Amino acid sequence: MEKLPTQLLGIGFSLERGNNKEKERIPFDIVFPPHSGFKEAKKISSIDGLKDRAVPKWENNNVNVLTISPAREGDAGNYTCTAYDTATARNESANFIAARTIAVNVPNNINVVEEERLRIECEVKGNPELHWIYQNETFDKSRDRVILEDYTKDNKVIRNGAFIIEKITMEDRGTVVCVGEDLYTKETSEDECTVRIKDKYAALWPFLGICAEVIVLCAIIVIYEKKRNKTELEESDTDQSPDQKNTPDHGKEANLRHRQ
Image (cartoon, rainbow, N blue to C red; front, top):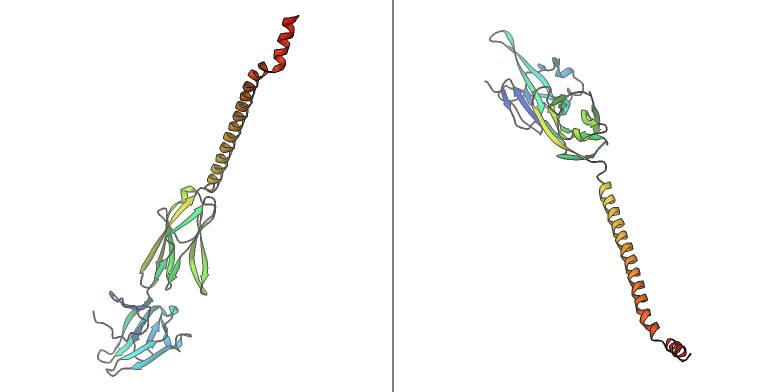
């Protein structure tokens, strides 16, 4: 397949023509004859916000190059180059897809306490369309217990960028996958997050364990003190009994009785 002449500048875009795709991460500069460039079937020279950045220029080899600079995400789309072929007396055209390389990113894992709210945000590069895969089901809109919400980051709205489950349960743990797809090139990018669910009483068990240890320790101390006091009392009674028999008064009483 004939390769379209291009002048490549900047970062972030790739150019595709039919099955011939240049995967260089660059903006698109597309070769057009003057005033014959179209985007989504509209003349580039009539598109506000694009026409002022689209500059046609003739090269030395009689090639007219349309440079769009600086390239923006909104510049992605289907482009058509048309030219009149004097040899065949007919118009010739070629279609191109200009698209920014896409990427998506979610946390590697996330921990959620049982019955709390799970929220995962999918960050994107480029302008992909997002859907989610969870428990072998695909979600491109909210349904059942899964809620998909838009969120804003750096003044950019990420459609369906937040995956939410209210009052999560132990059965909800697993893997959640964010998938981004470029609408023009059908290129996809995906990233997955492992969801771990913590028992809602998990923080209480250590506290209860400490309380139980304190109660057992106090019980041991009380029992020990009672036993020690009882032993000391018995020893005191045992020590006093022989002394009473050997006192002087006791001997005198015996003598008096003998004399009588």
